[in-house]
Image (cartoon, rainbow, N blue to C red; front, top):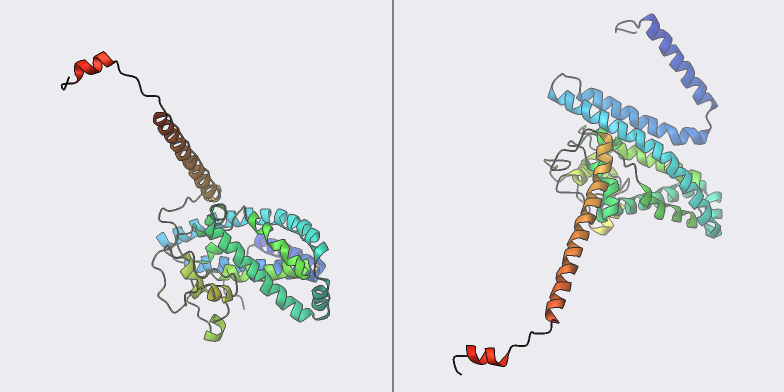
Length: 325
C-alpha cells in the first residue's frame, strides 16, 4: 500500500508515459541488446541510490556528494558517447584481426558455449588489466586514465568518472579475436564486468565471503587502489588473479587508506577534469623540449669553446709582462 504523498495528475500521466515507453522498449529489444544494456542501467541505478543515501541529510556532505555526482554524471555521458565510437572502431579492427583467428578454438567455443563464455570473460578481464596497467605506467595512458582518479572520496560516483579517450585499449582488445571469440559475447562480458567495476567503488561497508574475495575484486580491496599513495595495486577489473600473479595484490583486510584522489582537488568542471591530464602531458613535453634545447645549446657552446683557436700573444708583450725577464 502506498503511504507517501499521492502523485499529482501530471505526475501520474508522466509515470504512465514512462512505464508505457519502457515496456515497449523492453518488448522490442533483442536478448543481445538487453544483455548489453541492462547491466549499465543497473549500475547507474545503484549509483543513484547511493548518492541519494549519502545526501539524505542537509549539510556539507550532501553538497559534496551532489557536486561529485553532477561532475561524474557528465563524465559518464561523455564516455557513453565515446563508447559508441569506440565500439565501431573495435568492431572494424576485430573483423580485421579475425581473419587470422584460430579456427579450432572458435569451433570449440561454439560447440561448448558455457566454456566459451567463461573463457571470453577471463580473456577480457586480462585485457582490461593490461589496459589498466598501461593507464598507470605510461604517460599517455595516465593522461587518459587520471579522470577516474579525480574524485576526493571513495564512493560510487568514482565508477562514473570515466575517460573520454580510452583508445589505447584498441591496441590490445582486438587481439582477443585471434582466440576465436565471438565479438558479441565479448561485448556482453564487458558490460557485466563494467557494471561490477562501477559497484566496486561503493562506500557501503559491504564484505563478502573469503572464498569470493580471494578471486573477485571487491570494494574493500579496490579502495586500496584509489588511496592517494596507492595506484599501482589491486588493478584487476574483476578478477584478483592478475594482481596476485604480479605481486600487486593488497588484501582487503589491510587498513583502508585515509585519503583519496589527487593532493590538489580536481575541478568540478567535467571538461577540465578530462583535459587536465592531456594538458599536463603537453606541458611536460614542452618543458622537456625546453630543457633539451637548453642542454643542446649548452653542449654546443661547450664544444665551440673547446675547439676555439687560442689567440696568439705577442712575444714582446709576453716578455714585458713576465717578471722573470
